[in-house]
Image (cartoon, rainbow, N blue to C red):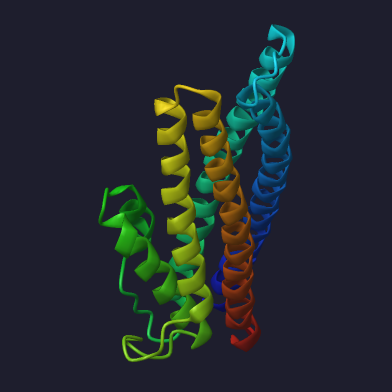
Length: 225
């Protein structure tokens, strides 16, 4: 069992590193999107002010915004996949230490993220359970009486707010009928990107926090004789 635990913790550590790398990539792309947003704001402000803008300049702006958006979506999807792969391994590790108990199965620790509405609560509960059981080396059958980790709560709150603001920006852009409307949508979208940066930083801290706690699993496990 110690050898199995050490191998599982090592696998979790590798996946945690890749998860944080991709979160940094998403953060960098959000910064690029904000810079692009400032450029679009300048263009839209000129149009709203009555200035005539050539079609080439407008097309170049639209192409840039579209390309950045596509790359952001692709990076988010890839990061989400790697996040869930990491989460599965980290949550499965709980079965190898302490009480060997957990609130969810490793499969549902991933599956609940795909259940509409319920995922708004369950995803948070899963990460909280993982954090607390990793922190205590899963010593008890339940961690319900322990205080919720503030870092995890802050990450989830900012993530949900960023997602809501992003939806609002998309709705404003869809319903826009003038340069002023598009300017408003651009401002909200830039706010969404800024919130996403905060969410990514918090997510990186969450992954690193859980990874550091799970490293103790192997450190405290007796060597096989």
